[in-house]
Image: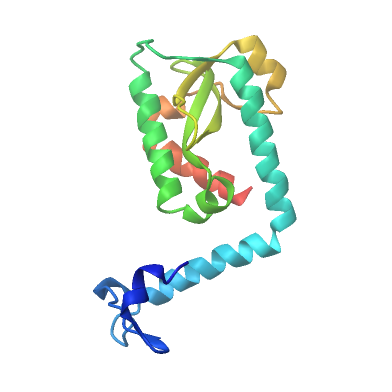
Length: 186
């Protein structure tokens, strides 16, 4: 019962509750309006696009299961470029948490972070797929995929390939932002 902790304070038909200063609505502080707009936008998006969202959520789950079968965790492996991959993932996950929170709330609400499974990581080449990591699964953020397995599943896994440059190596922050904007608009 929601009011159980306040039962002792109930006097007849009323109860006095202390409201934290951060939750007070006033004429001078209108931050609450932005919070309500965000809640409403999320709700509207979920209701209007329910069928599409449900379909995409199922697709994310199926793709993640396929990816788990063909990847090898890079656990204990040391490579200098893991630093670049970690920077990219930090930036990308931060963008999901802050600037693109509605996407996280709708599509990745059951997921802690996004990880990367790559088959090529060189100065001029990059091929990878991003995958969600569940709150309920102890998983790692960087996995390696055999190139032939990646090629066989490329379209299904939404594999991304760069063959003239490696944008994560060049500028992981800028690429995380560009990638997030591309995904939001697609």
